[in-house]
Length: 232
Image (cartoon, rainbow, N blue to C red; front, side):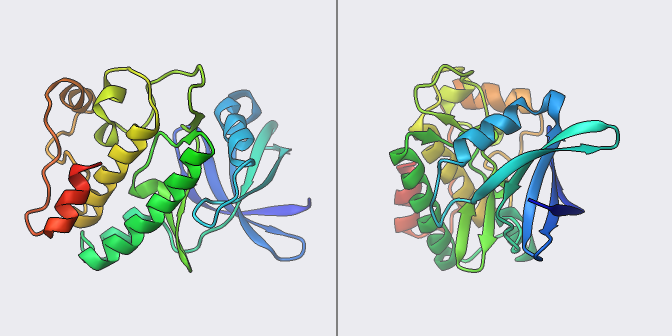
């Protein structure tokens, strides 16, 4: 496929995301890393290429290009123009109405249900990894994802969204995604991560793992919302 790289729209710890266009004018996103450091990106391609759901970002394939005197591995992904859920929360002043949260939470649940039925654990659910499409949400960034029961390192994800068993280095499976979903609901309500007072990742991991503390529920939540969070 002939394509042209456009402006950078995102940057992670191991890859850069750019806009791209085909010769026919189709716009998509390309996630790129040097071939020598693209192991995680190639693993992501192997997993996400087997998924097909309206609540999951689509993968269109991959290739290798020669750029700036090095080989670059490129993963072709659906471009979702609305930005991330975290971006939306910030644009709304740091919190969403409960009715909007219910709508988005329902869509995240449908995406997670699809993944879990396929045997996939996302391992890094949070607002930054959920994109806003014209018809609703799409779960993205499968760099930490794995097949359930696979022999891969148990410790993956973002400390403030980790379930206690993950922070302790135990097996990371479907319940960890549900915990992270609950943390994302709190992010939608408050505009911050579930442990805003903890700035040090190591301290956050230790507290989550061993303190038996749970994130505080927003006091203005309805009884229904509080009941939902208590089950995450």
